[in-house]
Amino acid sequence: MAIANSYPMGTVKSTDLLLGTSVPVVGTGEKATTRNFTVSEVLALGNAPNIVASAFTITDAQLKTLGTTSVTLLSLVGDSGNGEYLQLISASISSGGGAVGSSYAWDGAGATITWTSSPSTGDNRIVIPQGQLPSGSGTVTQPYTIAALDGSYRRGGDLILSTVADPTITGTPVATLTINLTYRLFPQT
Image (cartoon, rainbow, N blue to C red; front, side, top):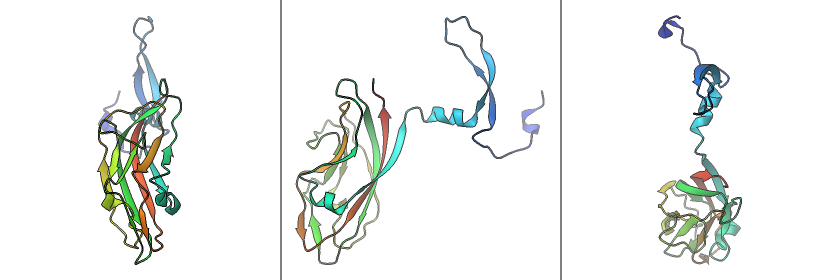
């Protein structure tokens, strides 16, 4: 066999093959075998924890009634006994739009992303501070990054965005809220 570093460098493709050993399940009596694996198969192992990044856009109509009507960001499969659940990791948000002289005034608690519209301090959640919610005044804010707070999550509990009360509206504000969310999805059992 040639010295590995004597081969020329190349640009990797997902269909390229890697040489490896397939190890059998212990106790089956099978022997380890040398096999080819594609780069894409090896990369898929890195995604095994199912870490997902998704973007959600909350419309002006949804923002105006967020206190009375939560927005479902993600519907999970199953029920509280055997359903999917997730671990919130982080979010980055950006908001914008509106007209000068118009505004939304949000409750001091801000908004929350979790499985319930009445979150407790023990829930895995993301809290968006009041000052990072859209103002509807035409002011464009810088993107804001938030780490999730550790806690529990209910199986089969949809992921929702909610706040304590609808915003107080002055003038005719129009705004959107974009949420780039990173989370780990656990399968239904």
